[in-house]
Image 1: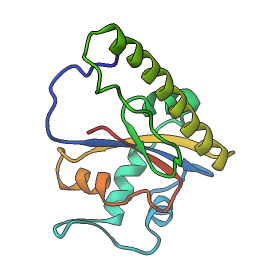
Image 2: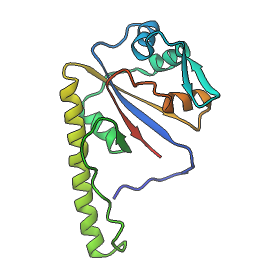
Image 3: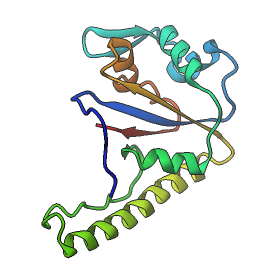
Image 4: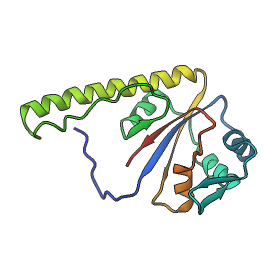
Length: 166
């Protein structure tokens, strides 16, 4: 069973598994890929940042490309959203914790969830064959800019999977 340890708050974070044909060579190139000609990235009425600032932050966060192993690990740390077209396995809430029935159902759930994540990764990688993958993460507890990056549709114009960690 996966258990979260440490402080848990009402804040959320999301990681994004993103794909590029080639890693953008400059902040300006990334800004054009992510936002076209838009100058403002909007989230809520007062959570707006310039697309230049957003691209600067994301560009700085693009480190080394990742492979399938890292993508699967990232999917295991949250709830993937996006173009998955798959039914997520259901957690055995209906069973009493600690009972043999619960333990067996928990094992089945974890196996099904691993297969679900593998299917998501396989489908994403098939659609983006030959592209390079990166993982970035933003948290709405880290101020207006990070909140806008997390919730403002930063990656809507490129292939991506959002992994919610609420």
